Image (cartoon, rainbow, N blue to C red; front, top):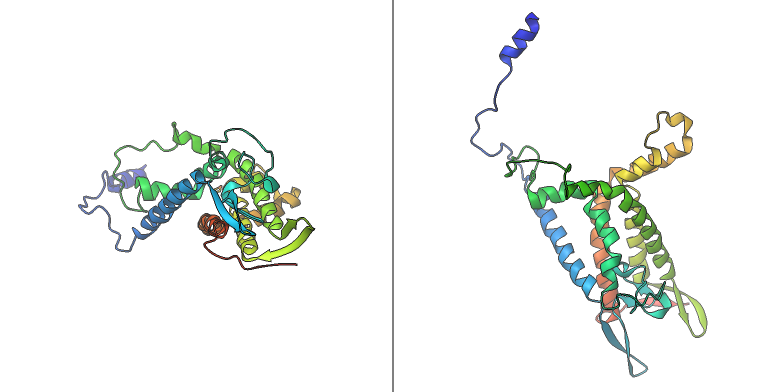
Length: 283
Ligand code: FES
């Protein structure tokens, strides 16, 4: 009892009276500022790309030939994959769904990856800091007076992350398929092996998307959550070990895959409308 009383006497009862907003002297503002710029640029570009699925005309044998500019055979923009709506070129249309043809297919295709990224544990940390300053950095006070966390609507919806993961894992498989078919060129004489700069762009895109998706914190839980003894579940332990290695670099996967998917979309558009040449060879 004597020791406890002594402790209570020396415990401070209020915060130290510091007039400065924080005592950090490093460039703590750099990370949130970079996030603000890069993420903001992606949202602006992604919104434009999602709405713009217009027709472009290229000249084939002297004739103007219309096609969607998110497709430059055999490359399909990852923003428009899987192509399931009216307006998709016939050789890549998965379902010929003649619905909502007045909408860009990207709008309903992107709901899944956007939901996945917006609820990602890493991105939450990044955009809470960059956009809501909540807090802007460690040991830097936030401007808000009240903190309710993620226990109420709308932030309660962040708990949907694991469900977005299931859909995004399927989407990762589809983007991998797109990367594989970018090595195949079909014409009236059949199938040909094709290799081009765009093929590598899509392969890198698939690798980054898979690395990001399978390094997800929810994926760690899916592979080995609720286990009491790893020794009794060696296969799940192996999967968990692999996922944990990816998870260690989750931040890097997150940014690399975000930037690269926009670059891949841009590359395919520029090839599609003839602004740049895709160097390739058909065997
Ligand atoms: S935690 Fe980032 S994708 Fe799941």
